Length: 272
Image 1 (cartoon, rainbow, N blue to C red):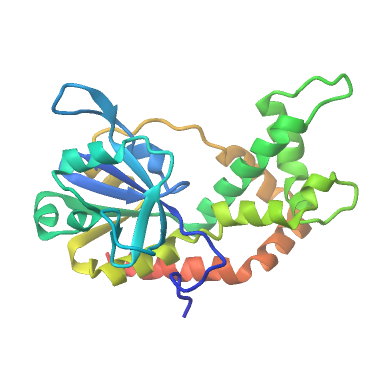
Image 2 (cartoon, rainbow, N blue to C red):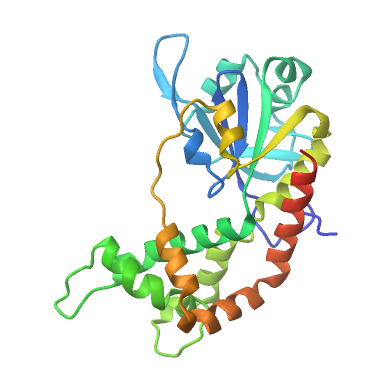
């Protein structure tokens, strides 16, 4: 069995915690974290964010930001740690998982079909690089829609997986590929989450909700913000038979990790 805490090859995912009324919503990037971000009015009447982001790591030394051998490190916080602690009336991460917080807040963990997450992250990350460099013969930078319908929908994966020769050196570098995979696919949210819930002994104290279960999502949050989607372009690319060799190669390269994520996802759904 894959042990997330003992495997040093992969970064832990970003843990996003959103405070919404009497609910703490745990998610990560490409698992709907943006859907739960809101403004929050603190006790001083200031408008602040309701979501804090943590870069999870194995802990090295004990501190107010460690618990159960996990370190909750700083990662581009929308909500500052001190404000997060003030809202919950705690002074350390260990208190976040104490009985007083379990009694006051519902703990909800968000999951999402791993293949949906994989495709969304893949195309967003890679296209953000391509959109900066793609130009036409007149050196005119293409608009985002033009980029989507050209390299985004036709060439993006074969370039990143070294399937053709006439590509810039930048896209040959394994480190570039590794950094992308580490961010969107092999951050392995569901595998991490399965370990996290079991290590924390939280199974009986939480709810697990699939992002596509709109009825349950709407039961914990009254309204969701409309977010940009690249689903149309992903679907076009996947359904184009000309792309099948590249898609098959991509899946084969990542089969172990995608299979593991799907297995973890199913186990989490069975915990509901």
